Length: 362
Image 1: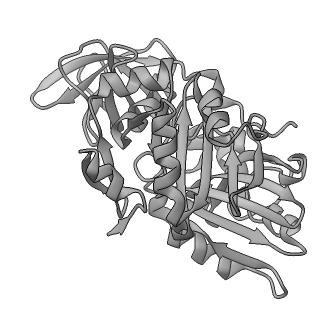
Image 2: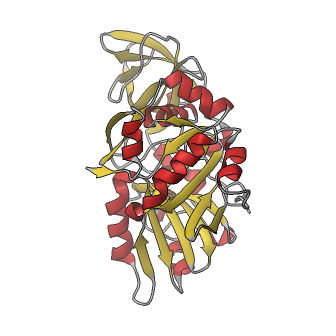
Image 3: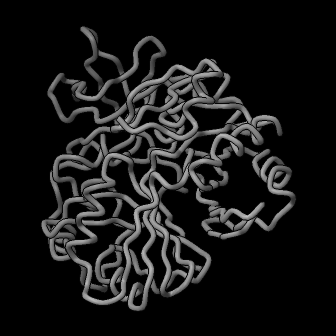
């Protein structure tokens, strides 16, 4: 089991620890309501050291990644990033990535912890001959996310008022002789910033952010924040040969270029797909949907299954994602979820606009 470099501090603070995609990480520090409140109204502090962190460097990096990833990288200016997908030849999703372009010959990729080795193997398998380097930085860098309206103030206080990246931007800077990578992607589920520092410095920066007023938050809070945004997770919602069409992630795919899986994507757009990923909210506080729970129509016929779910303190009810028959994915459709011996009413909701508009127009 991998360990975050910041774990000694988490244990000292009494965090509830648990396994998360091959990593031992803090699940919760106080309670879900308090951590949510901090992330929404002040500043939540998250350990994201488990995210895969890959750097691609060398001449030809832009052209190579352009032919491998689903979004149009050439539309992304230096210093900015975009959401993109890495697909297999059959169109199924390997991982949902955030790509940051530092220059035409230098890129920084953030991905899901569970897919780190799969992504690396895929990149190495397709790497052309030449000086192009694929560098795995995952265990060499601690990752810390600040989420909420006070993030800017706290980040500037700790980093001594240094320049900060713009929305979906990336910035490299030096502080006390160490290279820091700053991004502004909102990985923790709310608007915020991310800091990637040398692994050994993670505890120091985490403590500095805490002293400056940030509230430690665990992965349980991050999970509910992403479900509020109807943001699919690679490990839970994008498994089992799911494609961008089925997952509602076509907005991260450029249909005018060729890359692995693009032919399947074109075919599915023309022919359609029987099921699509939809966002649900439960009309009760008493039960929370779990992965594998059945979704039925109002006549009791099974029409899909839950891929992930959680109770949201911010919304006051449970939210979930599920693959449903196409005809039932219209917002406002009334359904039911079978969970633990009861049938709970649910409704298909409209995902927030932010998740439907990748930042690639800069």
